[in-house]
Length: 115
Length: 112
View 1 (cartoon, rainbow over the protein chains, first blue to last red):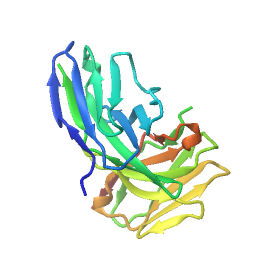
View 2: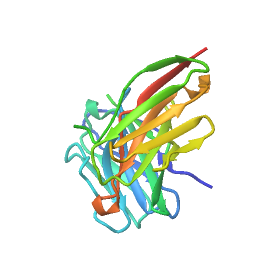
View 3: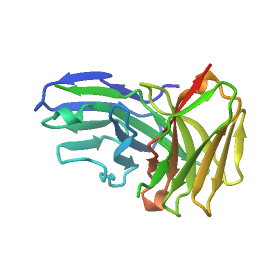
View 4: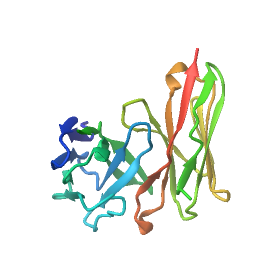
């Protein structure tokens, strides 16, 4: 079946512009995560949605970053007034729980370059 | 202290070698444990879950020591295609937010 999809796959923008990154999770997955990965670095947790609960925003680096998840499905990560240090790969993942175990599947990521 | 810590490597080994990766986690309430693999410029993919009794999948063996809060991954008879970054992942459980916490990853390079 279809996996997690993200769009755009690549985005080049000028400093100060706003960008919106989209994630389509696997159908039926209740949890959705956003991560950021800079070149040669590990995954940096940004935000986590679980069902109808309030999202865990503890990883968002500044108030320029926000995310929403509509109808428990598609999510959009928005970065306002982009800065060069925002350049990274933004990864989305969705997950389901079975037998007390959670299995997480990643999308291919959006590579963002801020000039 | 990071919630999940790994040796960053890189580990450079010849084909056929056995290599072990170690990982420690700080939250004693952690409930689920995994190893993910990430190839260069690709997204992470689940390699295997880690169970309390230890588990094996072909050349890969995962171990969990809850008392020491320690997880390991052993790769036997390493192949060139095993070259990747291996990520240790912990789930702290839904009653504490439920999100998966990733280590920084250990890079493995298998040489001919």
